[in-house]
Image (tube, rainbow, N blue to C red; front, top):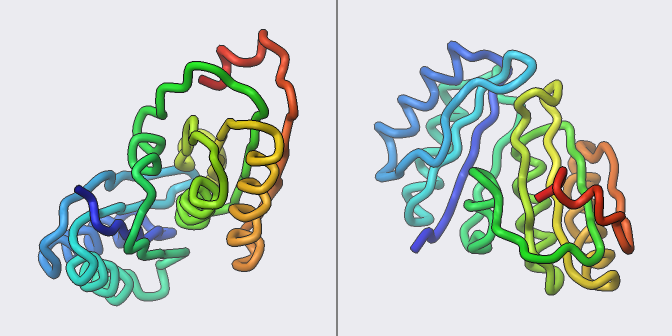
Length: 182
């Protein structure tokens, strides 16, 4: 069971790799993802117990110094978040469709976690900055009221950091659009 996740996002690939090494050497954590993203940034997302994740993220921030773009620690991450970050969650039917778009990976994961905790929704995917000019987005589904509530809650967390690009709720997406999303 994943107890906590933490991420540090860097504007330097070299500094990101060096900081990922420091993160792993400092805390008893495992890597979920550690890779370059667009446009020439680097992310490291780790998991473990809360204290270990806190130590690792702190070490990553210290080593990354002025190259740190964003970071977070989520002590009680929702179980849908990790699968949505990797390959997406299997969704059988899309009712209303919610989309949150941010300027950073860290802001997106926190927004997605907040959204899925705010309503009876299913995360479809969290896209982490590859091929998107460094932006990230999440898609989620549920009934219209739940999706509106979830999108508003998630978007608010990104907006509070000044990293929200856009939020959209499509009450009944066209059936031809669904294969492009799931």
